[in-house]
Figure 1 (cartoon, rainbow, N blue to C red):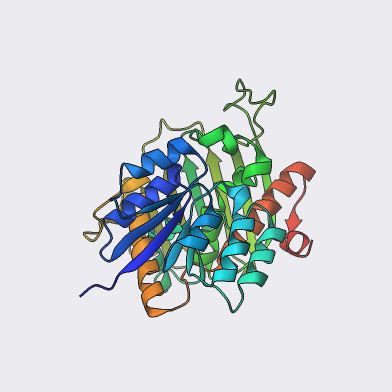
Figure 2: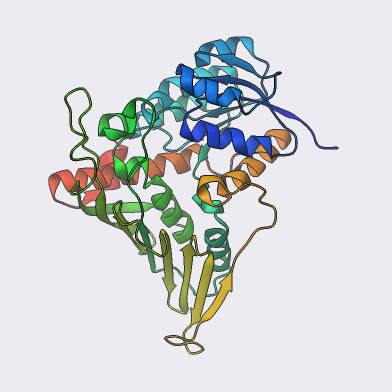
Length: 357
């Protein structure tokens, strides 16, 4: 018999609804409460759940009044810190949407507060996209040898509209290279098995949102960038981001190279390719379509959010540490912050500069 976990969902915007839809198909998940100050968002959530779910206009009411076993935080980025600091007092296991916080300093505040009190899982679910998970598994076998290069290309559509247009300004999001690209810096670190030491980046806002005005202000979020990351192991990572390139066959392309060969993952094509030096050559590599029959709901991220929820559920039941930890969340934000600093100052930035300030 499947055990039950009663969830409280804080935030019912775009990603809050995504989490709710995943919980609705997760065996053992019960949505006990939902909180959001926006009436339209709350009304949308009400259409999805049953009459037992309680609704609140702020997270404090939910924390005080509802009986939950675990929490989901899917609120705007700039609200994460204060909400997580309050949640830490409850000790409830929590899954927070990426990024952990918008600044390194706030990430550290949360880590310090949650230490020995509260298990917090950071929503870096791109790890679980089936083709990417298969790439990670293959890399971990050592089949291509020590990792020397990790190249990630995301060519995609512009940022979606969100409640109150909060995601149009760096002060709210942490900046594009924190808000969006924390996923990719997490993957680089996970795949390389090493911590980053230096970042050099170039980027700009060249196309998107230039004609939008909110309260007299034009959005300031980057829409394209190149980011080079050096790792302690000697590996190098490179991110190629373009957010006005939805006319593409794939949205994400990941290439990992070692002295013995190369592995690629293509998303949403959901294909991995592997070539071993001495066995394969141009146009002649192994190619595999990757699927996962466990996924009942694909959602926005090709089923990775469901797989993340399944793992988080198991972690709650078994009281085990999160796979995607607060430390992982901190590193992913730190690389993004260093990349923004590099663009602003036109120079390479050591991670120590952003980690110690």
